[in-house]
Structure formats: structure tokens, C-alpha cells
Length: 376
Image: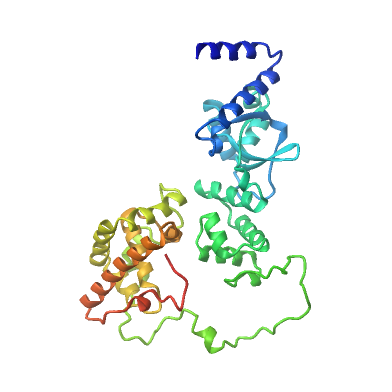
């Protein structure tokens, strides 16, 4: 071991200038990375490259105001670079996937630039993620994990991914959103054609139309389509309404846009954590049904909604204060785990209905699979 160390130091001393030393160290790290048990993780190989080679991408929705940029500079001046810049190679340049503002500080701050000798620390995104749509998704995941993104810019990116033939479900999965959020972002764009919850035809292009034939727009809905629309059964004599101010779920953060301390990914994994622990799930459901009187009455008497899904969301919110917008965490469960969790929620739903002197349901009525998408 000592001989190897002495050999490395000897070779390093032979490097005649600073740039040669950096190249030698990068190559040494690359060799270690290629033989590392952690080589599947980009952070295992941090490389120092000339800052002028690192360029911005053209799709990052994250914007940082001047005060935050100054704070970032102060942080790097005092602590150094604690996070590398996530990149991918683009010809003779290196494009930023995440960390553009860290790269700006390294280029524009005289103090930082001098300390790092005009270099920047980078890691390369996984090779299978280097297509533009995969890079876009990766950038957004990084931004959302920090809870920072601009709605208008996010909307533009969702539109681009849809133009690239991505289905809503795939966009939701890759960006850590739910499908309702995808539709809202499409709505922000002002493109009416994006509002519909279905995939685009592969012939559809943003520059124009494939042909001049159009279906006439009408307000008519045929019986088959009408049956798929989620409409509250206002005539249901068992329906109980309560005003928003009475819903206990509000105080627990059910309708918030973010969690105070958890990242979006952490919020989603709370679904897996609770819903796969069936005994704990039952314990929490019992508390929800006993303590959320008005929330339960308002939601569990609504026969037009997925009440099984609502109970799952309510349980995760009750235990962890996770907003329902992170219900995409349901997809982290296996099919068997989903089935088991559904059955537990179904049991407690019927238990609650009986306590209200209402009729028990069968599972399909509780989930409403034939009328709406899964709401978990």
C-alpha cells in the first residue's frame, strides 16, 4: 500500500504544470471508479474540468433571484464546493443537467474562480439517461427534490415531453408528479389540446397539423363518454356536506403544495412506508375514522369518488402530514402490496359505513374503477 502511494506521489510530482496534475488526478479517479463497487452511482467519480467547457441547458425551469445567488456564493466561498455539478457530454462541451447556478458562481465569482483555479467539479449523468427527454426529466427531479421550480417553465417542459410522445403516466412517474398535476401544467400553457388526458398521435407536431380535416367542436356528450365523467350524485340522500373550514384534513396539510421538511420523493416513499405496514395502516385508519369526523363524513359519503384512495391518502397525511398531491407514491407499491392495502382500506370503509347506519359496499363501488383513474 505504501509503495503504491509513493508511486502515485512520484508520478504526480513529474507533472510539470497545474493542468497536468489535474489530468493525472482525474485519470486516477476514473481508474478507481471503473473498478469501484459503487460505479453505478455518478457521485463515485467527481471530475474537475475547465469551467469554460461547462455550458447551460436550454430547459431548466429553476430560476434563482439575486439574493439567493449571493447566498450561494457566500456558501461556496465559506464551505467550498460540497456538491458537484451534474452534467452530460455534448461534443466538446459539457452541458449542465443540474447545478447551473453552482457553475455560474464558479465562473463569475472572482473569489471562487481563483480558489478552484478556473475549474468546476462535475459528475456525469448515467449513460442510459443522456437522451434529451431523460435529461429534462432528471433536471426537474433535481429541482423538485429541492422544492424549487417555476410553474410557467415547468408547463413548457411538460408540453415538450408530450410533444415527444410521452404519455401523462410516464411524465408523472419520471417527474415525480401525479397525473392531475400534469393536466394543470398543460392548462397553464393555454394549449387547449393539451387538456385532454390521453396520448398524442405520433403524427402530431407543434409546428403545424398533419392534415386539414378537423372534427367540429360541440358541447354534445354521448352516453358512453358521459358515463366516464366524474359527477357528484347530489340527489344521494346519504350524502353529507361540510364546509371547508370544518375539514380536519386541512390542519394536517392534506391540501398543501409541499411538506415543511420532507422532499417530494420522501413524501412519496411515506406511502410505501405506511401502506406496506398493514398493522400500522389499520391503527392509523382507526384514528382517522374516529378523529376526522367532518372530513370522513364529507368524503366517505361521496359515492362518486374513490373512497378507498381517499382513506389511503388520509392515513398518510394523518401520520406524516404528507399532502395528497404526493399520492403518486402509491405506484411504489407492488401489485400485491396495493391489493393488500386496498383490502384493509375497504374493510375500514365498510366498518365506518355500518357505524353510520349505511349499507356496506363491494370493492368496485368503493374504488369506482369504471368511472375514474386511481387516485392514490
